[in-house]
Length: 453
Ligand code: ZN
Image 1 (cartoon, rainbow, N blue to C red):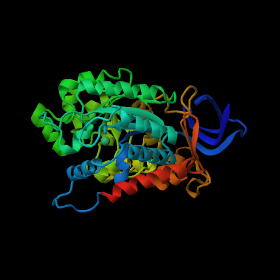
Image 2 (cartoon, rainbow, N blue to C red; image 1 turned 180 degrees about the vertical axis):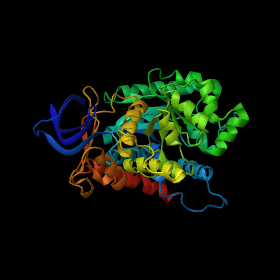
Image 3 (cartoon, rainbow, N blue to C red; image 1 turned 45 degrees about the horizontal axis):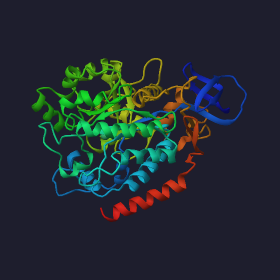
Image 4 (tube, helix red, strand yellow; image 1 turned 90 degrees about the vertical axis):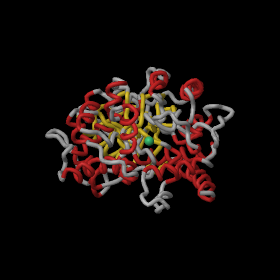
């Protein structure tokens, strides 16, 4: 049995000191405060969250979409055109190399799990690979290299818009009808089942634009026990398109038609009216927020204050992967509320500081989004753990919630010293143990892609 000892740790009973954690087959076997040091010694031990929304391949586009195009108003939609052009070239080998690199960065940032919203399925032009699930398999191969916990969400993408139009040339690599998608899902599920025991599986209709209402039911029955994820209410133009087609705003339609519950995870939700925010929060569904990407793409500001006052569940994702930065995601979420409302610390409660409330919400919501037994340093959970460097100047003398506030608001991922995913100790001294090899393969892949960009 392996032991990890922490000077202080955030446990289900709150902050406790001199905590000894015993690991057994990747799970937490015991949590004992007041223990003498033994095994790996750490400063501040926290449960490590899941990164609840990612499109791995987009990591290679980071920094390439900041120039002004011929279009007078650059927007999400022109960004999407660039993304589609990028997709005309990317190969399975490149997908694997990029995914392994971004998963490594996620671990170094403190995430234990990659919930991969995987919609790139076919060859350029839309012809399937010899093995229909080829690119899902590549994501799994990448996770074998990086050691991250993987929850794979194969994405159903059928139409180019709510009028049922076909896919544009840039979308051909994503497309399936329900019958072919079912085959792809079974292949991908078998690969995940053959992987480490902590890996998980769910399903993701891409969005109301890409998944016709008539197919939604069939698609969501393909993973009866796993989480369901869908992009929702991200952009104003999307709201208008749904309103025109269905006579309701996206969240109104979802509440009336899908009766969402705790299995449902809606990505973004940056375009909601107050009644939608409150209705969706009360449904038990989780809002998966990607604050850095939402800011980068100009999506809008999620109403976190109203959502959390209605006891809504949140999870955090890195989405476009323009930055892999856990503390920054949480800070950006809170900062956006401050800028909109001219307020401070509106998400804190009398019992919990802002940092504590955001962090606990993200680890608990992330566990649901990954369909993974995690989210607390508790016996039986997977040993998903993150240790902050207690010797960092910003943590010197800090205790309790001040640790999380200093990490999120004053610090950054450089405070992350060790990370375990299901007991796999992948990050030591702030560095992934296989960084050199994974980085070399990534450099080779992006060099090829950028040469033809
Ligand atoms: Zn997304």
